[in-house]
Image (tube, rainbow, N blue to C red; front, side, top):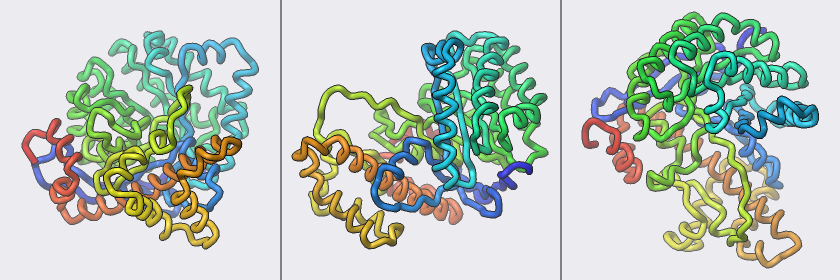
Length: 411
């Protein structure tokens, strides 16, 4: 069949010299449709929000990604429990149906930072790969893109051998896992930046003759791994390569609660997908504290209570509701969304329904974020095309402050 990604072309570059990362747009052709970056891809938890919301909210994003982060206990179960393996296979098959919504359907298994510590040689790395390949081999899935993990604790020579092994065996991997393409990933947290650059160059050599030129970079704190990020963009900025930031934090609490994807669009990437989170909070908190919304004027993720306190209840409702009115065409569904927002206080007064109602309200917040963030990225792409990125940044005060921490010059 051939790769679903038919082309990657660099279109516009910000010409100014004041940014650490000079913003750009990429034209990404998926199937017969072209998409312009920057753009967010949708993870399975966000897709679950669409499923949970009793209203049809269209998603125009190009890709859905199922990402599973495997910790040491989970990997032990994979090695020893048939039942756990069957659970993972069934999970892949379950997500295949809702992900048929997207032209690009990606799957990613990668080790947690704790498991990374145990994978310290090439043999263990390949053993991890073979285990996850089996899940795809034996499941009836429809994923067409496989994201290959990177291993932080491989010695430099073995890490290079790992990348070379992937390049050599790419066709066999695609055949065994029943996907159409694979995505190589690198991690800025790798301690040897020179070795990391050699691996990047090897990957670029592999990609140069392909149409599906995407490389994945695991999200990390930029100030902590600044040398790695500078190296990445020195090598990637002028290339027809789509850079996918994987496992991005929804909110950067160390940087004014900025949206992770919107901050990352100025330092590392073209497309972005959020890190899946474990939801476990035994302390019962008010819904206005647990539910957060994306504010496009600030590019921040804010608690609902703080938005109401700052803007007033009526203005807060209007900001949220207006994002849905353009996309949701069914009148009954838009009324449902309006009533859910306006009657949020009643959720905690219905004990029998409180958990279900909280889940719906949380799902509404995530769908609002997808719609609002997607539109904001479209707005940013217009600024990039017009070489007006500095004007965009000046209008976003928290973004400006955050970028000044990593820029060579004051904006």
